[in-house]
Image (cartoon, rainbow, N blue to C red; front, side, top):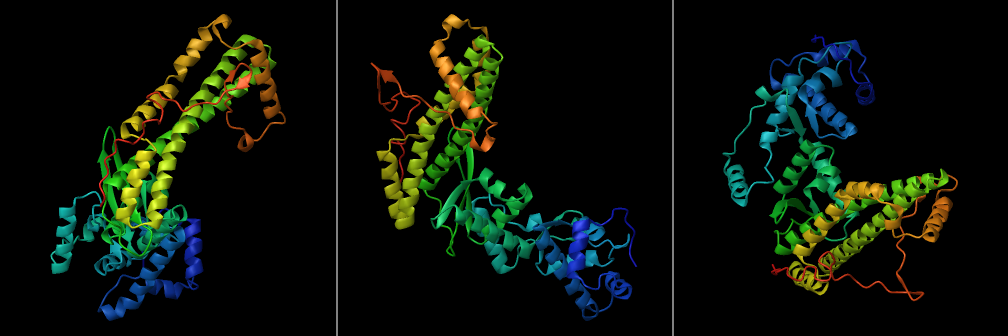
Length: 425
């Protein structure tokens, strides 16, 4: 009736199968279902429809759209070591009817416009290449219906964090929304095939890949010059956030080490950690300042796009960028400055460790004040989620707090994005 296989069915999958098939333990019924197909299609079509629907239902319950043929046959539907002899035939029929796709069947989203045009023409005149499933039964198979549902889930997820009709995200962010690189490729391919998404890339100092997705029923518009600049800014915010995460972790570690050293009476080591805390706080302040300015520009562009036509939004976005003084060159300059700052912290640690106290520009009163703050904040084992962020004290001049003016150095945003030349679509 079936071939034996040593691996037992996964309990979760077995439970799903039993939930979907009330008579799964009926020997007579299962014997008939597990047999290989023979005769005319009308003879085995009811069994085919049973297995097709069951495969799709189990995949939907598992939240996957890509399945492995051998796993489906030998794990999903293994029953007492016996497996259905008809599954290979079922999978081939599903591929023939379009319920299953191979990776070779998918549109390459990174291909050029000429490839996509030729592919569409091929489909229209019926000369598109047909891949045979016979030699691919051990490979990953893509279920079309669950794939379409996963595409809808991705668009819904993006719509929850965007209020515009389209959104632009980096390829890395798109892949993180999906469950695997293979699924990300399949979803993006299907969205591009349906006109709901467009892949594009930019090459400045770094190669950046992005995706533009339509969050409404309309097709996604063509890629504009503003889209490329928005992708660049979004990539910048992601890098800045990564820098902030690194700085915050090291800042928190230095705070705790400073308090520990102070309690143990090792004042010289405590001085060094307090100095590190202040250096990390300064780095964080610069990073946040830059991040806020970039996000401000992105917000202005998003607001313009939500209220205006695309062509008007491009013009407004370009004006917003110009007024906020942000240059592409400054983005990279500032990022490089931050990366160098974080990367050099080990050197700072070593330098501080070898420095004598007279070269540390912190007086005893400042250190004692910092320790009192640390003791209050860490008293009672403050939960990590309630740990305060670094605070930057305002400079004091003649006893009066002095306003901090925006920096005019190359690492600031005083000249940001003014050199962007954006053309209206």
